[in-house]
Image 1 (cartoon, helix red, strand yellow):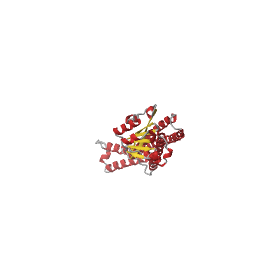
Image 2 (image 1 turned 180 degrees about the vertical axis):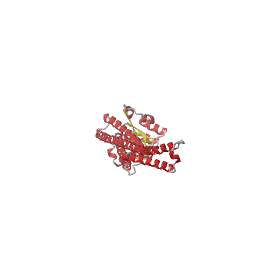
Image 3 (image 1 turned 90 degrees about the horizontal axis):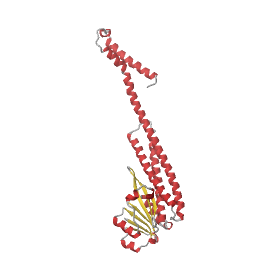
Image 4 (image 1 turned 90 degrees about the vertical axis):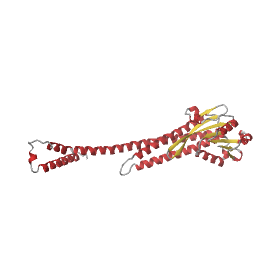
Length: 317
């Protein structure tokens, strides 16, 4: 799907036909947004703008040059956008091209950031005079959404941390899996935020953007630095929770092992006594004694009680 944002009266055209492209000039356009475009739609935009759009594989490359690059007649930049799903974050690469002052964005799925940038553009279209301004507006909306996602993770970590101080102090498998999932989400989110930092650093070094954009880029870089610090802090909290949960599990396991050890030692004296009286020797006076059986039972119980008393005095129980 192609969406055209025209400069004149802030007009938006969705799924334009080829005749409209023939009537338009570069000065009429502000932003061309491609959402899961077909090969025909990509070719239509490429022919109109006289450029080659980047493929998804090129947008996914991690080299610095693939994040931001300039040619004689265009600027190419890519950024990864994280999408929050029930099972966690997924990464969606988005490519941007600026040619003749027109922004061309290409993506394969719906992104809330673009809807927010479109809303701001239609509300205050006079402040978005070029495609450069639209690109910066999209990145600003994305950074705000990144901040919301960092806050969501922080709240989830706080909820797990509060639940870990229950009276019973029990830790189940689900809690560890939840911590692990949050660690993965934090790392993915941090990667996308860092990716945005690389793109904006390229914009800051460029001399082709309007002068009023550079102060906004400086503010965004500061915001990204704060978000990276917050994400690092979240990861440290998750590592602390993971270590604490593993420590609680080890304590529970040690208690179980301790219980079995005490039971094993507790039954060792009675087992020794039973083994002695299980020997069928002729010269064993207790075998002929009327109260021999009761004496052996009493002896076993007394030995267990003495062992138990010894453990308690040593404070091993």
